[in-house]
Length: 397
Image (tube, rainbow, N blue to C red; front, side, top):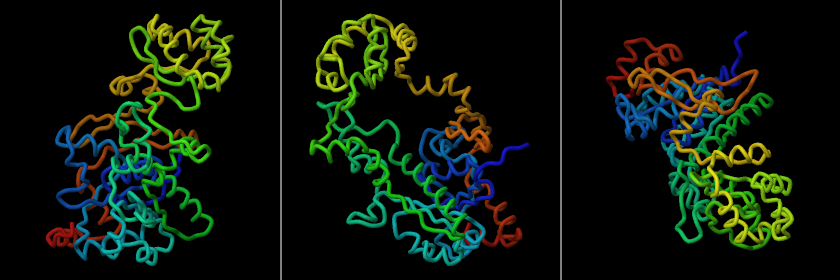
């Protein structure tokens, strides 16, 4: 029997662009939701113009817009806004990441659309949220990374604050928004009513501070940049083997004893300076250089074999190309091939959430701009070809 996807039958109108919103809607689409991406005619999502390109299509856009349909609406046109409202009546979710107040100015805010469809889930993603002293401020990923405190604790103590190598604020906000939408859908199944889901990127990123915030609230101490070091666990960082870097995660005394066995240094287990979790943290400045000296004596491959034999968590520092060609990830279904109408054969990441009974799926390639406009208007709104042509002539599409 075919496996039913968990969000099959859910229709999402996706008015988002760039990354946080599209990542959210891709998660929903992977799990079976019908996602109709509403884009500006002639331009589309901002990322369609961001290089590099394959077959004229932006790799950035294609990385987060699979499994979706593209429809072009000029929301400055009253006719296009009427079409959107008509689609809202037939949809379950509206997703937008405009600056707060934009949708209200268009007459398409939650207060208006919830009257059109009382069961509507309306998800709004913004940088700083809609309330509070800074509510409504514009915020891209970089701005939020800095404002959230995470950049202040990323990097080495003697260096400047650093952003992460990926757009973590956008991606975390997208995941949180998808979580919020599914929770609202679950609640709707019980109450028979929709609701607004509001997601501030700053809120989502501040929530990631977890134990770092706990250190400040509990002790009054300001967490600082530690490079690759952990504030509460040693050794738990990057070390240099003879030929490459590796990571070592020793989070308790049992793992410490096993790592010492792998290094053939039983004397370190008996050393009072390193005998407990707290002692190793206190004597970090002595222990870490010593371990770098020991680990530098053999290759990373040899250390990996020794550490894995003892059950000690350890890993290599992989390059992006190595990860993208990983046999393990391929076996897990995390590297998927699709055929795009313009770009040809493309590769995308798979679905990380593995539901064994109702799995998600990477099914269709990212759409070309407006690829499904006529199809959606014909099938959902029952418009005739002449009516669609008139709307296009008018500039609504």
